[in-house]
Amino acid sequence: MFNQNPKEDFPIFEDQENLKIELPLRLTVLEAVAFKSTFDELLNRDLAKKSIVLDCSKTQFIDSSGIGALIKNYKSAQSKQIELSLESVQSPVMAVLSMTGLNEVLNISSTSNNFDDEKLEPETHPSVRSKVKRFIDILGAIVGLGITAAAFIPIAIAIKLDSPGPIFFSQNRCGWLGKNFKIWKFRSMCSDAEALKKKVANQASGAFFKNDNDPRVTKVGRFLRKTSLDELPQFWNVLIGDMSLVGTRPPTQEEVDCYQVPEWQRLNVKPGMTGEWQVNGRSKVRNFEDVINLDLRYQKNWNLQYDLILIIRTINVIFNKNSGAV
Image 1 (cartoon, rainbow, N blue to C red):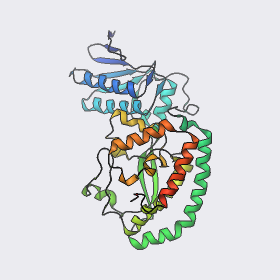
Image 2: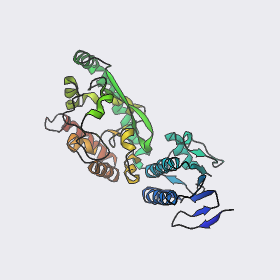
Image 3: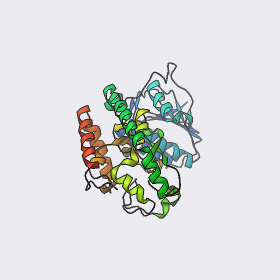
């Protein structure tokens, strides 16, 4: 039997070989930070434990910060060669784990009997569940794909004449709750840009990359970026639901791997083709804390009218030569 050792909101049960941590009703940013701290303290004890079990029987809600804490703790346990497993996972939490693919990574020993991941959808922010917002996304994506089709031939010819390589560029990005998806753009860099990234200086601070004079960007690519034409293929991402017309900046997996638990909050909404960062100097933003603040401001102020205002402001930015786009 386990002997209880209460610790704040995370009761801990311990025997000679194993630890069991009871998770709270909700695992949002405040609880997630405490969870990560509690877990780190346990690992720093250098206890000769073979496994740590997370008791999820009471947990009914988890957002992106909770996902971030789970991933951080999973990696920390692996580094100590300690097995981490989840038990009594409730349906709302299992829905999130299934959607993000974490059910294939984490060791889940048991779930609630009534789990049906096809019927359950996580609720992290009202914008994600808004049917009107989704309708606007679909309508906008259809119009946008029509524009993309009309612009495709001249853009494709220009890209091919400027540099060898494919017309499109795709990259894995992290979307809602950290779910991986493939983002599409017209190629604006040399074909081996990803391999050359380490040779380019990062002019931004924090968990994102930016360089105003990136040598990997082609001549045509600079024009495409200045006019945002390189982003036209992302209307496909919007149509299939990986992105929204308006949201937060879609980060790379490399960026997310550097996140602290609170920074995962920005993944509580779907990434957007435009957003606060786009209309507030986009390439002039150099500090990752500023990116976080802009994304959280969007989440706090979101409503349908706010989305429309940001779309209108984005159009103005695109046609303003001093917009700061690079």
